[in-house]
Length: 163
Image 1 (cartoon, helix red, strand yellow):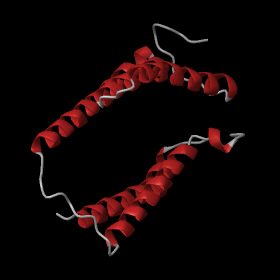
Image 2: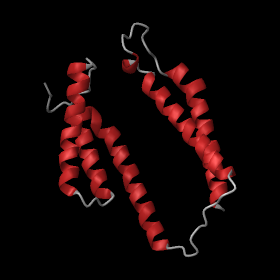
Image 3: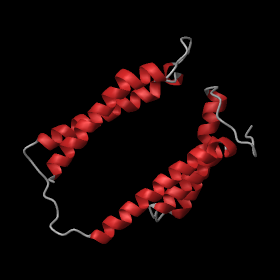
Image 4: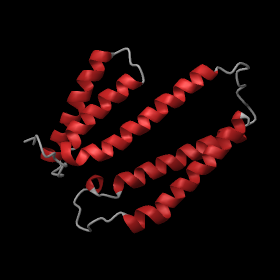
């Protein structure tokens, strides 16, 4: 299968997914109160934003797939790299599944610290100190903003509660 065909199919799939999200999933399954003071705090703002970004990405992929210029695929195929990539992808899926199971008892902030650091080490970052610092500081900063500035309740765990 050529790169153009792959891009075309991915683009059409992204556009269909975005259309499903914008026309069916978000309007019927995401509830939003009518008295939200700021649009950014509305529960439908970020799903709509992500759906629109998905649609724009799909349009870009379709246009790229239909363009006259094509990128030639490399002649050699390294199956060892391909196997490692699928192994890392399956581990990432496992991390996502564990995230769903652990989040109710650990809480959002602590779970995201573990997920960020494990994902950083999974992809083999060379900046380990930066990854560890960011995995601790970013969830805490986001918690402080959403809990204390925006007034949004962040799910807390059963073991450690943040102020």
